[in-house]
Length: 180
Ligand code: ZN
Image 1: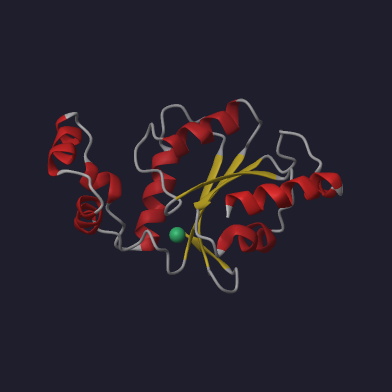
Image 2: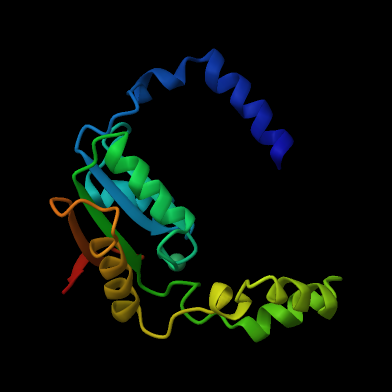
């Protein structure tokens, strides 16, 4: 698949298809969106929010979560605010998210079936990594959105004037529901 992508890429550039996407690194709408990596959202999310190239910083991970105050999502938001002029943040989870019902026990079974040893798992946990917390899903999407919004809003490095709001987007219709 990657080789096919590389072939496509050459013709994309030769056709100058990139010209329709020209933008600079500063988001025109001073907006950052934290959302899920779900494939249903790849084009639906920006289309349903009316975002085009150059409009917003879109940060994605499994679930659209901040799972700890100094994780990668939080780091990206800090960069978006201080380096790129972001003033508003939308946390956008979605319906039927694959990250919702993940269970660490399931991951553990899959990992050991594919050659990861129990010794490796216990060594990682001895280093202070809580794999259970890291890989466990969330039980309830609105609660998860509130938790991520709260972690961002109350973060000691986030300025008070940054607006942070939480939403769940319908994975089919794109309808946004605000989570208070
Ligand atoms: Zn998801």
